[in-house]
Amino acid sequence: MSKSASPAAAADGQLLRDIRGLIEQSRRQLASTVNSALTSLYWRIGQRIRAEVLQGERAAYGEEIVAALSRQLEAEHGRGFSTKNLRHMVRFAEAFADNGIVSTLSRQLAWSHFLELIYLKDPLQRDFYAQMCSQERWSVRVLRERKASLLFERTALSRQPGELIAAELATLRQTNDMTPALVLKDPYVLDFLGLHDRYLERDLEDAILGELESFLLELGAGFTFVARQKRIQIDNEDFYIDLLFYNRRLRRLVVVELKLGEFKVEYKGQMELYLRWLARHELEADELPPLGVILCSGKKQEQIELLELGQTGIHVAEYLTVLPPREVLGARLHEAIARSRARLDHRAEQS
Image 1 (cartoon, rainbow, N blue to C red):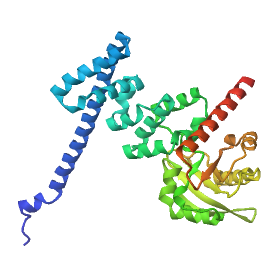
Image 2 (image 1 turned 90 degrees about the vertical axis):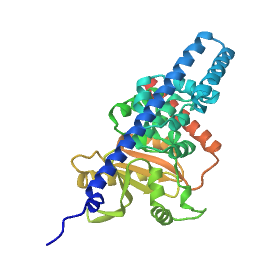
Image 3 (image 1 turned 135 degrees about the vertical axis):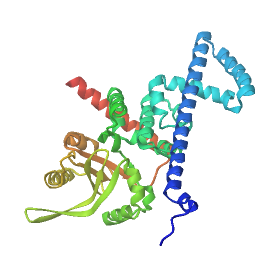
């Protein structure tokens, strides 16, 4: 006859695991609650100081107020209320004027995230990074990396007029729905592939698959790898898709075609063929039509504009196998953004 389990054995079993789980869950909830409460406190302190300083209408008066408060608060509550930190709180209230948005973001973002965001000068850029942090659960380190790589300036979203960017970010905040403009980039930075001056398309493809994790991170949120050289047959003729991915946030298949040289007009027809075949034969009931990304080493902007590729779900982007200095890349991206917004404004005036 088997003996019943001892109390010690029971303690090592399911009961102990359940209680450990409850403790860990409670700790996580407590940490989230504390973080949210601290963030709200810092915002309210910043807002109160800001209101006082604005009443004084003098910069020197503001510095005096902050310094005096800091001496008192540090003596009572410690180093968390230094002059520097109080200035951060004031800037926090200036950068995020809507307390409702702060309350929502603080459920996912720590104070360290906000410190990375509040000194971004462009409100749209700041809102983009805040929303992406919240949506994708970025760590502070990942946020710094995304900022350093000029992610916002490389998104298709940044090429749109300011009103459309604001509207798209507001929709993301309300619905959590991603759009291609938030996901697609130009250029894609592929310096991690280690490619040199001379290489073939097959070398590029091999290098991407060898560094697939890094490539998926560069592609952006929600991408998973599906196939390489996917064979499709049309009228007894074989065609091969270079790389096929699926994006769970967009609920779309995404074709990536790799080209060594500059964009050519015939690439459009090739990509349209692939996208229409996938839409007919691979599309699931709950999915949206597939997207195509043509990665080239160079672009011919006027040709791309005249072809109106965006209306057919095709995105043309450059790829960089060597990352230029941040200042050079930043200047180039800002020029591209300005040109794109100017073209859109001109088109709107004509219509």
